Length: 204
Image 1 (tube, helix red, strand yellow):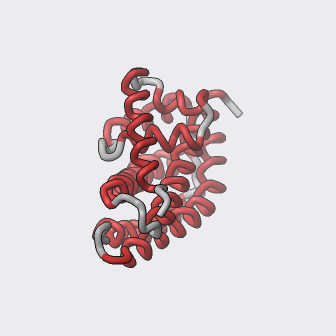
Image 2 (image 1 turned 90 degrees about the horizontal axis):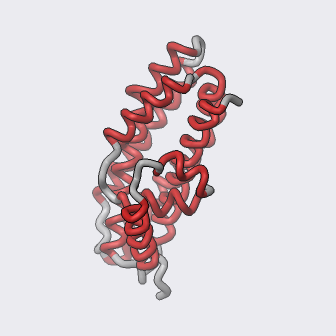
């Protein structure tokens, strides 16, 4: 695998693993009566905003780019976009669920639905996307896409993005995504993420 496409694959795996981890933590924390409602709202809002932005960047930018480079891949990408639509509906339900309602039943149900859809979707997406990135996407094309992603990434839950990336990736891999973030800011966000996550896993 070329070094350029290695970056694309590592970046993509890290983002996917962050979504897996964040959706799992939310589903578990929603069912924890001792979890802070404020912290639940932070994580819920982070997950909704970042998944929505991620899927739109794939549908609107990455898929068309890959289709130009890899003829014949349009059909599986169309199927993946249909799964994005299913996730969008589940994210809307999650965004509407109260973190303060007794029992948090709607939140638990919505968080579990999003978690299950995210995990299933990524199992379908990675066998299509990762080989396409490694075989067809150049350094320049990936850099252009990554710049667009950085410009449109929501500011919601920046601390959780740092926290989850550092949970799921090696320091070397995380540096690929966070290399432009000043070290003092990264440390501050890491501490903030640990505090938020601690309030989600509090013992009852």
